[in-house]
Length: 385
Image (cartoon, rainbow, N blue to C red; front, side, top):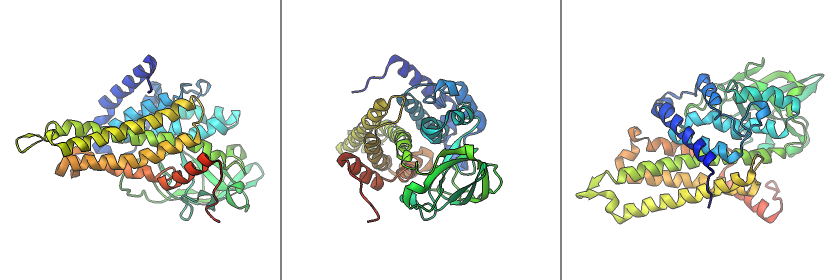
């Protein structure tokens, strides 16, 4: 059983009020128009002290535990998923890679703009032939004097074309697997970096996704965040990201549950509220059980993480469960809403569209199951053998 402190309850209430008053009314419009959250709104969240809670205070953050940031992210994601995206990126995304593994100079240079809402950093790992098999990435980087020269392409970068900076995972040498890989920070306007057309995805509309091409892109060597051979550090950073992903799923599922509970007590058939029918009660109960179980898994991993990174097993268990839970819960919500669940007006279909996307991002449930077995047994499994 988790009991939030009075301070956490107040933080959660503040986030809920701002999110519902300011951003909930924009959710349908932003989804339909694929509108990314304006920079002015990111800065507004920063001024409210809600954008980068886990980043240390000396870099402009809140110096708060990860759980506090996830509480805020959930409230914004329930109101309007796009309003939660900058919070997710600053609290659980690439900025945390710099926080955990960057040099002091890099932290001083890169983190304050994130905490102020001036910059969002997106992560670029996947390529056309390197998705779950991330170490198949072919984008190359070579050190030329005091610069790094990058050539290659990236795909499925959430925020591509919208974010101001990109943490790009590259291959520094021909050494096989992750041992030859590292990560470099690249500004959006760096010469040689180009973006393809924005993709029209099923969900996550407004987040941004586009192919990225690197042609002799040059950045200072001081922008190398993860040097060659440090790819395994990615799994630590991914554990943080996976809880941000899980929290987005939790928010979607909770919203679906809340709206369904309201609807089944208002909708009448055969002369009575449809909640009076046992099949409806059973569906609603399944939603409650699954949402509550998901919250316990996410909060356990976040609480145990404190101000650092979560346990990789706990993070993978949480993500694997909630990724599949949110699809089940939003599907039940559609069924209990009947024809209205299929209509854009009720926004249940939007919740389901977004739910599917989170299960693909950041490591699929299939990959999580491999990670869970590996962590639980304390052994590695070679997928290539």
